[in-house]
Amino acid sequence: MNTTSWLNPLAALVLSPLLPGIINRTKAFFAGRRGQPLLQGYYDIAKLLHKGAVYSRTTSWIFRAGPVVGLAAVLMALVLLPLGGSAAPLNFTGDIILLAYLLGLMRFFTVIAALDTGSAFEGMGASREVQFSVLTEPALLLSLAAMGKAGQIGSGSRIEHLDNFLSLSGIYSNLSASVWMRNGTILLLVAGALLIVLLAESPRIPVDDPNTHLELTMIHEVMVLDHGGPDFAMILYGAALKLWVFSALLAGVLIPVRSAYWWLDAGAVIGGIFLLAVVIGVIESSMARLRLLRVPQLLTGAGVLSILAFALILWR
Amino acid sequence: MTGLTGSDVQGHLAVAVSPLRSVVLISGILLVLIALLAVMRSRLLAGRKVELSGTWDCGYARPTARMQYTASSFAQPLTNMFGVLLQTHRSLERPEGFFPTQAGLHTETGDIFRRNVYRPIFQSVERLLLWLHWLQQGRVQIYILYIAVTMLILLIWNL
Image 1: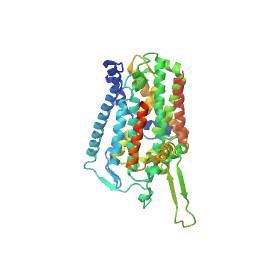
Image 2 (image 1 turned 90 degrees about the horizontal axis):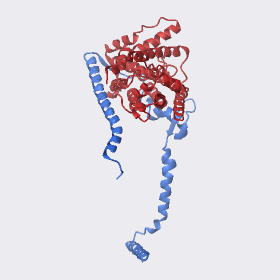
Image 3 (image 1 turned 120 degrees about the vertical axis):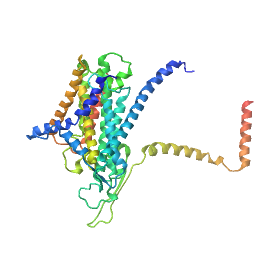
Image 4 (image 1 turned 180 degrees about the horizontal axis):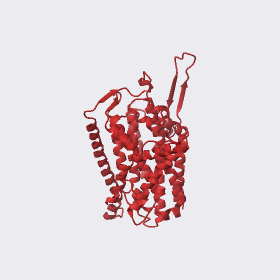
């Protein structure tokens, strides 16, 4: 374990609330507005941390545990996440599954906290969240698996070594420009699938509109309607960190800079994460959200892209 | 017996054990982190106003437990999506007239494996065994006769 491996968790902890700010500034630019300050995410969290709380009478300890467990789970997910070529602070064979299920644990507690309020709105949001995650989870896992196999073939070394193929750090350290030259199609399919997964999990347009004011059409926002004060601060911070996790996964594929300097590799990925925030802003400015019945089709599309990538890499 | 040496077995076990060790470590850290965050939250809220109120109902005055999301409404998008496989049975009683007094919706998602695989198999086994039911007379004399006949047959077999 070296000190550089802790750079990603630290960068995420410090910089992730910037991402929503960048998205909102990009949207403001497209709409011809000045927009909110870039640091609005930090201001919101700081303000909420200084507030009291209001709880619904129908809620139990589950409702209070939701934000705490959610934030803890996404913090642990960060520790598994590699940055550039350097390995994550903790990595082992099969940690891709643990990553998926740490995020699953976060989602599970958000969902049961929402159901705990007894509100039909929040039940509706929880139900949709679970439906969509059924479709995004296989897309995420298959994309990572296809990427691992592509990197393994591309690097041409240690074919039999499982560590390289089944751990996030191994998968990402194998990626490089030469892998893109050889398996570009597969990585492009994977990037497409991961972009859809990122938009669905964040959750942004075209899957969910974070700015909507109508409870009936919300997904993520409606699940956290009844949270306030420090609880809501944890939820906002957790959501920013989750956005960072998925952006880092995608940026790691798109910008595999492998130079002699670790800070250049890491800087490229962090730059890529901020660039992705701009891209999300552009996507949100240029299209409306999909009808709820159409969303599963988009997510199935992500699944198909990842299955195609996986099939292509297996039959090479 | 299997032709493997001790070190071989240990090598293979290590492949399975080392990820498990990491999973345990990470789960441990996760639990500590949850406890720390919970303490931090209660520290923050100590001395501040923590109120109890109703669930946000969007201005609707009298929500009741009957309007709550039930298990089947929660699962409905998924049961719809996999409707081809699940074969949910749905019976709908529409409200009729201007002041409907009755309406209802009943859905039932059975276990397709129980219905299409296990039940037919076990039913045919049961039918087969019922066919042998005449053997079971309930009289001790007849059972002793069965034993005697069996032993006789075995004796002849061995001759």
